[in-house]
Structures are given as C-alpha cells and as structure tokens.
Image 1 (cartoon, rainbow, N blue to C red):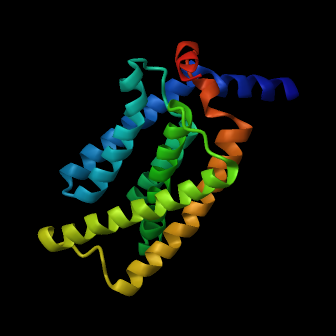
Image 2: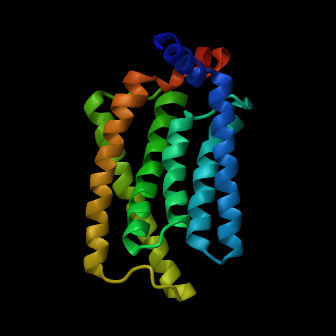
Length: 203
C-alpha cells in the first residue's frame, strides 16, 4: 500500500504529468470563457480568460510547454468557475466569486515565487496573498460596477453587500495564503516540477 502511495506521489510530481494536467485545465478554462462569451456573460468570460492567460505566462515566457504552474493551483482556480456553472443558489455564486478572487491572487503569488528571483518570508507570503486578494476583489468590484453602468447588469446590489464581499474575500484570501505557505512552499515546492534548464536559470 505504501509503495502504491509513493508511486502515485511520484507520478503527480512528474513534470510531464503536471504540465499535461495543467494544459487540460487551461483548455477547460478557455472553453468556459468561450461559452460564457457566447451567452453574453462577459464578466465570467473575462475571469476565465484572465486565469487562462495568467497560466500561459510561464510557458510563453520560457518557450517551454512544461514550464507550467502546479496543476493544483489551476484546480483551485477552475473550481469556482465550475461551481458557478453548476450553481443554483445565489450564495453558491457569491462563494464562487470569493474563491475566484483568491485563486487569481494565489496564481500571481506562485508565479512570483517560482518563476522569478523573488523569495518571500513565511509571514510575508501569507500577507502578500491576502493583500493581493483584497486588491483583486477591488478590481473585480470596479469591473462589476462598470458592467452595471454600461451594460445594464445588476451585479452590485448595495454598498452594504459590497463591503461584506470585501470581508469574505479577505477571509478566503487568508485561507489561500495559508495554502500557499504550507503546501506550495513546504509540502510540494512548486519549483521542483520545472524542467531542469529553467530551474538552473532561476538559481
């Protein structure tokens, strides 16, 4: 049993497997973006497209298809999209929004940590993800407001609800920061899944 678990761990940590799973998730996000665009759901088309675009930054920059984010990061980003597609309650949709915002911040944090010389202390890593989540929530609120003004949507119900959205985004951001610190920096360092030549460039 222990041998099977170790074999599974080795498979999941393999660079090619990681890249393959990551590309599948990027494809899923692009399909959702296209579907949302066809349904005139511009905000979620923009979000899914933005996640896919962020995921494509490393392979485009290094011109290497294996230079992908850990697939777990993209799963966290794709789950809110999937949750919203299947949502039947407003609460589920709002929770998906908070998770989406935190997922974007988490992607930025992992890319900075893995693909740049930037190295964060433990406490700053968590703080960075929280602040990035709040900042992304602010940008998302502005996008929703612009949609309400110019497209006639009704995403922002009231200032009271908007303030609670920021509170929820902060809480989810703290959770994302802890996930980043404990998992992607300690349990399974994301840089270990990069091709050897890219790892050498980053040293």
